[in-house]
Amino acid sequence: MLSADPLPPLSPAGAAHSELVAGHLRSLIAAGGGWLPFSQFMDAALYSPGLGYYMAGQARFGAGGDFVTAPEISPLYARCLATQVAEIMKRAGGGDLVEYGAGSGALAAELLQALAAAGALPGRYRIVEISAPLRALQRERIARIPGLLARVEWLDGPPATSWQGVAIANEVLDAMPVDRFCASRGGCEAIGVVAAGNGFAWRSRPAGAALADSVVRINASLPDPLPDRYVSELRPMMPAWIRAATATLEQGALLLCDYGLPRSHYYHASRDGGSLCAFYRHRRVEDVFARVGMQDLTAWVDFTAVAEAADAAGLELAGFTTQAHFLVALGIDRELAAALDGVGTREGLELRQGAMTLLLPGEMGERFKVMALARGIGITLAGFSFRDLSTSL
Image (cartoon, rainbow, N blue to C red; front, top):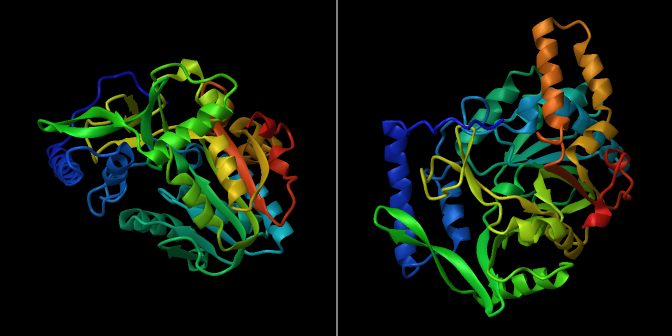
């Protein structure tokens, strides 16, 4: 839950690091002729080696960081997800589990335990992680579980050789860089970044062909055209990521869990301005140029674009639903009842509160969606049996 309290100031070390990141960004802007597409700004702010938000080693996840993810809110999330993973593994005839961007390692740790308890451990649990500090955090967390660390390996990129099984990307797409645009009756503008004193500012210029064509395609697919001077964002790198993440997957599925909407809702007239924002110490921050390198940058996911990219990559859409419907279909009520058996009052309260956060519409239940993209296993999956919203895409 986000707080409305004033933002705490950066520590002296945090302020110094932010200035280093700002200097790096200013050099990129200068190299670009004084203007930088926002996707490049966002990519550098988050992923520059040794500098970016996810690359510099500061605490990012949990109560002491800037945000919490579903696996950290409650172990029930991973226990339900394990049921879906086991079903896909069975259809694929076994295989590996690949997790993209494993964050703190909370999901990996809980999934491994749940799959072990169900007798459904994958051959290998492979974590694709480019951040050395996060790899260390993940390894430390998984090592607390006796006998399971030896089953885990870390990769710099998607598996290079053919494999089968399940891939998971939990809150990965939202951190993928976006380009900002302004659509008008006179054409399309790219909204990029310029240096402004010691900070940064927005600056528009005519969009290049790729961005302009993408906006035209989006506009043509909507039930109503975008209003004049409509501002939003799109992810230029997402189709290539979908292709790369599944290029060597012979049989199995990719599960995507993130906050987002179908395109007709994402680009609705009421959402002018887009969804781009920052997070710092569990507060939503509208100024994405503040505290560069020390705050997360994120935007909601256009799941219609994901489905289109999946089709182009030779994948089948095997389901799309809200997180609440996904977890209910996978028996979160049974998992909660089992978890409550024999626990104390305080732990029981925490489990119930965690379940409510995962399920309630005002929390994560409606805002977060789950999508399954399959290859060679059929398209009827348990997690989408309660309510499948694929027709909304």
